[in-house]
Structures are given as C-alpha cells and as structure tokens.
Length: 353
Image (cartoon, rainbow, N blue to C red; front, side):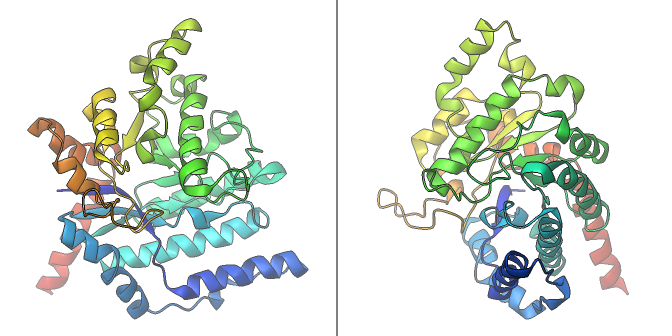
C-alpha cells in the first residue's frame, strides 16, 4: 500500500470559505459568533471536489491512501479568539470526517487543532486536547496538525517544547497519535507563505526540539516535519556540530527516535539528499498534492508535486522503498491499521446484510 501522509482538502467546496469569511467578519465587527449550523455543504459537493481533485490524482499516480487534513494555510489561527478557533476547527474537521466517510478506502483523517496566539494560548491548548480526543475517538482520525506559530508569521508564542503544550503531548501519547508540525498562513509581508514561512517553520521547529529535553519527558511522542524538514537535511552537519559543542547527545539518539520527515521535496536532487542524510526508517512518502505548488516542471514534464514519480526514479533498496511508501506510515500513525481494518469489516458487514 502506498500511503501519502500529507494531504490537505485544498479543493473544499466554496461554501466553506464563505462561512469562514462571515465568521471572521462577524467577530471583528461586532464580536458575534457565527453558528456552524449555518454551513451547508451537500455530499454531492464533496464528491465532486474529491473526484475531480485528490482522488483523480491518486488514481493517475498510483497511490492508494491519503492521510487527509484541512487546508493548512486556511487554519489561520490568529483570527478571533480561542472560541473562534475552536468553532473553525470543528467545522473543518467535521468536513474531513465526511470525506473519509464517503471515500473510506482512500482517505483517513488528521485534525486541525484550535490553537490561538498570545494570552489565549493556554486555553486553546486545553481546547486542542478536547478536539484531538473527539476527532480520534469519535471520528476515527489518526493524528493532528500542530502549528509552531499560531500568530501566523510573527512567532509570538513560546517554542513547541514549552510546558504550555504538555497537556497536548500527554493526550497525544495517551491516544498514541503523531502530530505533523505544520505552520498555517503568513500575515507577515516579509515572510512569504509557501517558500519562506513553511520551510522556516519546519527548520525552526527542528531546532526547538534539538535544544530541549522534550523526548525525555515524552519518550513515545512522534512528530513529523513536512516539506522534507525545511533546511534540516541540507545543514545536518551544522546541527550535529552545534549539539556536540553544547554537550548534547547525538541527533541519532536525541531526535531521530521521535522525529520523522516527509518527501514533499519537489526535485530529484533534493529528495536524494533527504534520503541520503535521513535514515529511510524516518522518511514517510508524501506529496501535498493540489497544494501550494500546482504547476508542471518543464524539466520533467510532470507536476512538481508528483513526488511518486520522483521517488520512483531514485535508486534505493526494495526494503527501504517499501518502508518509505507505506511501512513507516503504518508504524508512525499507529492507529491507521486498526482504522482501515475496522472500515473493511464494516463494509463487509454492510455487503452481507
């Protein structure tokens, strides 16, 4: 099974965006709350969005399953307060659950967390704990997105290793689910979203982990750094050297047992570097297709986000290839196998009845 661990519902029906605009405007203008009940999206709208988008590319590229979450850029945690973020997260996650219900063989959910910056951060972490539990236990999700910068471009929150996040990590380890560390939009005009904020967020989060003892406190916590880990593989020697200078344990002991990288790297030499530096057991196949980069690479004639085409062209052992394409995802998203088996059993029971 080829599992894409990094998919977002970037083609969601327009009604979702319109509801969000109304929610933000109502709060900013009068402090009013927009009811989630005002959002009306039919199953046919969802089917059309998926069948003409992510599912079409799954079939064309030969992948089997996508670990699917709300659009990362649209999380936009800086808007409103912690209640705004909670309503928006629940609306977004419920929509992902409907996608998974309509296409159970193709999509498994990962949830958006209702984070907020500033003074609202502690309350939003408590809300995140509750929302994660709801999504995992009630909706069958297998992980979450964790924004290292809920101020969206200004880094006005403590590092992810701060104890304010510990209740969330306690719940993640209790439920045995990983988080993909993924920033949202950038509202900072000096920090473009796709190629600056996203990659800087991956890089900054890695350094936060290097400087902390987080994994001593949570030895089974699992975190995924998307986009190939930003600058991390390219500067692996710098990280190794700095940690050695500080008397810290080697990265292979202190970081790699808990941190994983995905293959959202959109050129061959970059992906080769990733796989040369990071052990194959720490790399998960991903594409982020129909994401921030959607055009065709004139050098290959394929879309930049067709990472399966790129990975197929790289020389590696069959064992490592199988691990990257699916085995690692089943290990890191430890609930995934159980969710898939439960769906297969449910489908068989419906067929028999």
